[in-house]
Length: 158
Image (cartoon, rainbow, N blue to C red):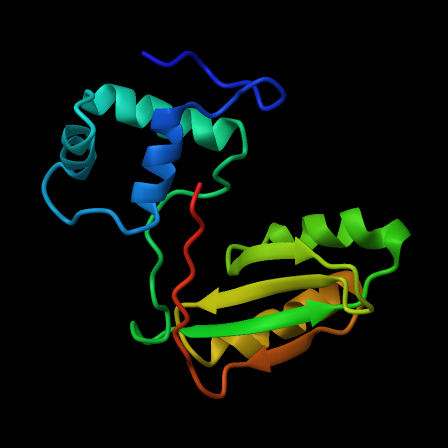
């Protein structure tokens, strides 16, 4: 069994790399998906789960879970950006990230240095979240709703 991960010391082994490559191709939809993937690698379900937890703890993975298409489920989804002075960035970042509708918040080296996704249960609620962020932070939010969707498959060989 793989030991617990330390982000500064954890080194990917061959099986970790194989798992990362496999997991990029999707996760099975079945009663025991972890077991199904574990069987592909001739390891136990517990070992697979422990390895995924280690990859998360060591920040090789930042997220592991389903991705839902909010708009197809009747919800709202929008990309937003803000221009935050460096000395206020952490404070504003904390405020924005505290909202349950926020996902994928990243700092960028650009005038618009904070980028995030707003996902809401109702399409109309996106604008309310934008107004709330502006009220809480005192900074404008540039809301950039999707006009047209394109799918670009992206896979990284590890």
